[in-house]
Image (cartoon, rainbow, N blue to C red; front, side, top):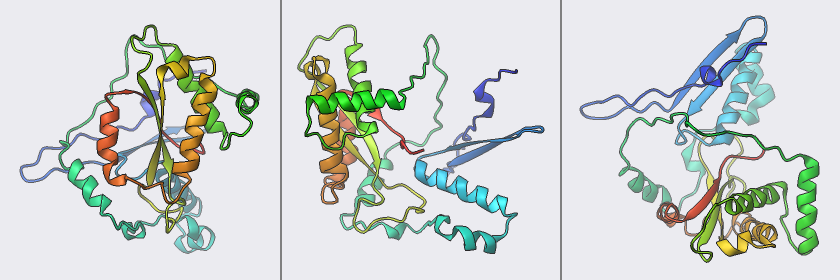
Length: 271
């Protein structure tokens, strides 16, 4: 058995070149590693402006299907027409002009290459919650509050992680300080009209659960966190009338949250 650093298989997006009149920004990078007699490993890195996780995974699946058919375009369309990425930005209706507001803010962000050096003097660990563990968490939440809705695997896992992180802090001076749990959500099917599943781009919303520190570290902290996150999913993320409410202020609101104690849950559970 050979042990290799995973860094050898990770794609790195190239630096932003200096131009006199404009700047070109690489948005994606691929790295293919051949394992003789075994197969290949494809590393994929992209800027989020290109598309979110659903789009990127859909692109990779379509690419794989085309390759499997030997580049047969007609064969691909006959079998996988519904998975062909759609690039039409006008699919998303924007009566409030949110794209203009966001673009005005983003234009103020300087374009420069980002580096994410591996942390030193840190321990990285993976914690696995198996189905039996998640069922126990769900049963615990429902035993405490039988009327809870949206008690999903995501909700109990996020609540458990949130309360554990908060309780692990060594010293807190103000037990009334607010704690935030912010999570992203695909809203493709949650807006009106809905966006096709094979749209290539970004269509994300978010939820923000907010509680006082003393609530999270208390005996009922886990259940209170479950209630707060579940409420955001029910009344914001899954509510077509609320999911985009205040979107014109999202960037400024999120910027303010950086000054508060917050945990971010990003990514898509299905991927």
